[in-house]
Image (cartoon, rainbow, N blue to C red; front, side):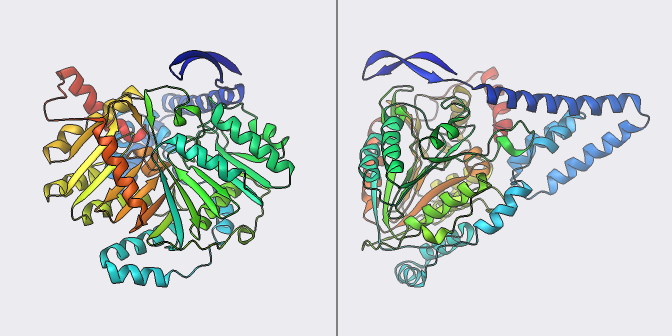
Length: 520
């Protein structure tokens, strides 16, 4: 199903044909709504017509409230659910039962038990020992990240940084053309246009010549960009494709556990990641929210195996027939480089018992000695991260954050700005990228450590989604990341206290939005 829209392309208005919500998604969403309303209606009728059932409802209501309080989740996430459960009879706790879960399904957990055993076989004792000799605190960061994400610390890996999506695009096309054995691609959004169509032509040619090609795309992320049966269309071209967590119209965790990952792996030797999805706005081919500022990384060497593993796990979670031996795809190419990196994944339980990306950010803020520079499209954070940012600034760390000046979602933009005044009062410096939308997710500290990947500073990224990133220490690429941040800062508006003035009504809306922001 398609519609025609007018977009700005190279400063000209042109008509383009895009997909809009396919019928399959409409049916799935309709089923979720019907299922939810039916359950609530049945519970309401039972309360009205069955004696004493109301008391059972009240007891359940308070039982659920106690269960929420006792959960290990962040208090900011508990608050809106407590509001629903205690103030909205029946509906509140029924919504909790149906939508609170962030755990994988039992079937996914069973598959995961097999998939996660195929770890990369490497001994990173030497790398960790070298890091310890230079900096014991950084070594502790690496050890923590390895344990939380089940990854390894790697040397011998070349890393290139791309300050714009169009630069990553050019490099990716060059490497895809060189593929000899396999190409793996996983993205939250894929949309027809110059970017994807150029890649697709290469994938078709490679598949025809015997190269194994696989694609994973998020089913909800591509709801408005791809046909509902796109994986079947790719299969006819010789490309193995699966939608991640296919939307089936079940009122459970379908809407929570999405794949926000961006991964390309070529022959196990070269890997790409970062914030760039496969759509033309990410390479500034079309203009949606001003100039699109995004970044990417290219890895070559031993560390690419971790990206291979993440892809194969996600593919196996969504293809019942997949029975891969991961070791057939691991490559051990050595690119001698100074510095170290840890490619890692993040996501829901039980795959990850703790919030990996958030832990990296908290460590970076608490252990910084001079500065922490951050770019993020969204700043929708809990009290723990707010306090970490404040504490770093108060103890004299130069904390700078760059967010977009042109919003992609007005409500989310309001939530982002709602944190400005409090952070600025503590000494955090806030900038907005004046030319357009910042989609980059970069975290840099003291010219020593950085994290680049898919992880935004918002609840969806930090709590719900499957994400991935690369932690970097003492690598020459850190100079490029810092240079790019400072260049972006020069093109940004610095905010000062008093610039964001709000009336009583706006302050009320901001307060309500902050209460329910963990659910968005």
